[in-house]
Amino acid sequence: MARILPKSGSPFVIFSVVFFFIAVAVAGKPNSFSRSLSQKKIGLKKEKLSHFRLYWHDIISGPNPTGVIVVGPPSNTSVTGFGLTRMIDNPLTMGPKMSSKLVGRAQGFYASAAQQELGLLMAMNFAFIEGKYNGSTITILGRNPVFSTVREMPVIGGSGLFRFARGYVQAKTHTLDLKTGDATVEYNVFVMHY
Ligand SMILES: *[C@@H]1O[C@H](CO)[C@@H](O)[C@H](O)[C@H]1NC(C)=O
Ligand SMILES: *[C@@H]1O[C@H](CO)[C@@H](O)[C@H](O)[C@H]1NC(C)=O
Image 1 (cartoon, helix red, strand yellow):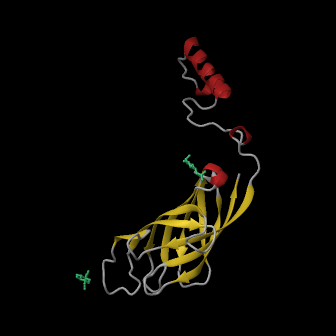
Image 2 (cartoon, rainbow, N blue to C red; image 1 turned 90 degrees about the vertical axis):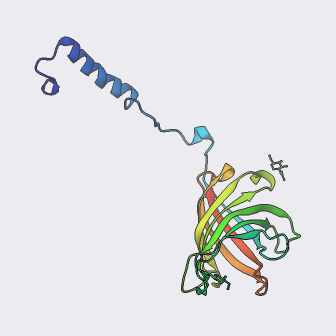
Image 3 (tube, protein in one colour; image 1 turned 135 degrees about the horizontal axis):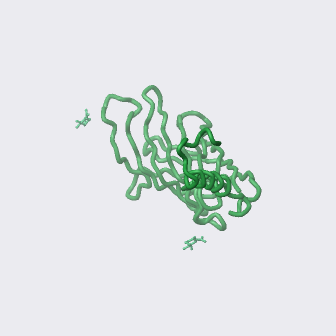
């Protein structure tokens, strides 16, 4: 202790230094902006796993599309439309038919991110409106090679009942209209949350 003090240390300096170390020991780092918190205190009790099966409707044709191109492909020569970006507000329903119960919307965008095959970058929030999930969201970010039978993408987070969410989705095309481009995709969501 004495070695780190200046040789000319007055009793006041010594007192200040000692006081500083005691204060640090008692209160943590000076000017601290972080603290540790008990999970239970903020209502995070037991982590659980939930499974949802939803149908995602991408309507890009007709007078009321739910997906619109916001960035066109910069080149007409790319067969995959590399660069094309479409903003979506797609209905999520309980059954494969559009007329079945609406449980939420998939909001975000997808973009053609592959030059050799049709591979999309998906960035979207599933915003639920049904029952206790109303107002809660799940965030999905991943790669979607649309012509593969099952495409897996990570769930990277969530809000509301899905705070601290992690998991994955599996997307499987249910119907695809090659003329209009409209598609219905079955999404199976597996998510860990509290
Ligand atoms: C793409 O094709 C359209 C219509 O044929 C043309 O007007 C446009 O200039 C082309 N864009 C590029 C980047 O070549
Ligand atoms: C969901 O929450 C919103 C806003 O709080 C409310 O207006 C709406 O009626 C709720 N919907 C359902 C289906 O509970």
